[in-house]
Length: 203
Ligand SMILES: C[S@@+](CC[C@H](N)C(=O)[O-])C[C@H]1O[C@@H](n2cnc3c(N)ncnc32)[C@H](O)[C@@H]1O
Image (cartoon, rainbow, N blue to C red; front, side, top):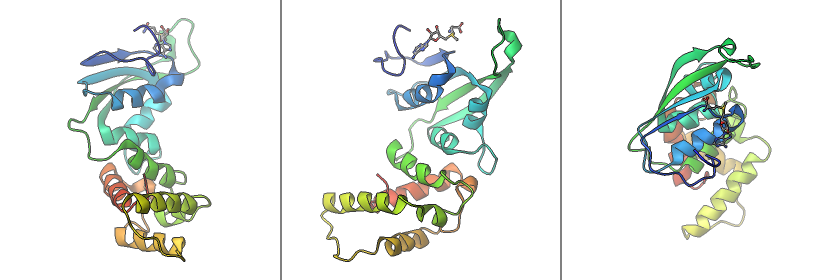
């Protein structure tokens, strides 16, 4: 293609095959997943570590915000290893080819809402959700989201809001208080993100 794949207007396509520089791996994947109409399949080459995070399963050491964000929207498979000695001169890193097949229809949540939750809970993925929501800065951000949500939805805000208590209440209601992101699969995360989004805490 001519131009920057991440920024250019993309024409209709059914299949995408690419071997781009590895520094644009993440924007490339998210550009593809947000593209409409949904394409059929993409065959892409990435640095091995990035590819393994794309396909990582919940509970494994590589399960991360990237794995969850991508697997919410697509089925991802590792197709083959491509060793560095296949190139002249050999690069410093190993490569892998992956296949990305977007889910059609896509899941019923905005990417920003799902990623908003993942950003918080994968920052310390082995801590409990409860622990992560107590982290410095997180309570302030949730309060900001909640206040915006209240004003958009014409909800009255009490004078003396105890945000920590409010968040504790929401977390216990959700049933995920003691769960760790490292162990949550995409369905758990989706359910939880929808819950927080409906109550105004992630946006
Ligand atoms: C590793 S080479 C691969 C060339 C060829 N596709 C192949 O497999 O032999 C990476 C290619 O990606 C192109 N490229 C770099 N940044 C890009 C971007 N942001 N959008 C689209 N193409 C890009 C480069 O111009 C270069 O041709």
